[in-house]
Image (cartoon, rainbow, N blue to C red):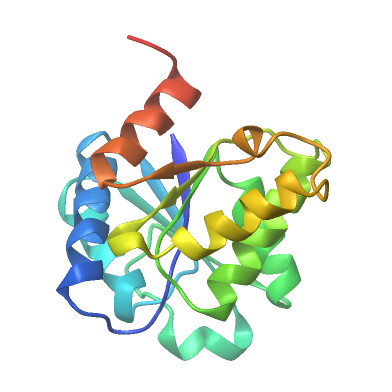
Amino acid sequence: MNICVFLSAADLDERYTRPARELAELLGEGGHTLVWGGSDTGLMKVVADGVRETGGRLVGVSVDFLREWARRDADEMVFAEDLAARKALLLARADAVVVLAGGLGTLDEVTEVLELRKHGLHDKPVVLLNTAGFYDGLALQLRRMEEEGFLPVPLSGLFVLADTAADAFAHLEESVVGPR
């Protein structure tokens, strides 16, 4: 399975790195491929290291202006012309999407993916890993959008909020691979 992970390239504390590492190890041990922004810094590095160390593959999708931070030992590294093309390539290469803690870039990525799902332009599962309640505010805002009629589809059809890496991974396996 090719799992796109949207997340921060910032160095973060253990509260965020531990669940990211747990998810990475589940992906790698399962023989899956990480499709990510290609950076070798911060939380992106933590996930890539974990996938690599446990047997998974790394497919990075970056942009030229971030080339100096690209991971050199990725199994494959693609450079898109701009951030919009990067997002499209990341989604095209993925069977599912997991969103970890991140900043504005991650927020941009997740909202675009949800908008595409809303319009039926992709049907890949999307899981938000709600580490330390990081996405509670976004989930609250999305529920308000649903309740007040701003979403033409049920919120439950757009994403799953998972509290742990194991829950996120279990949802991916059930959604993409099917029940065992």
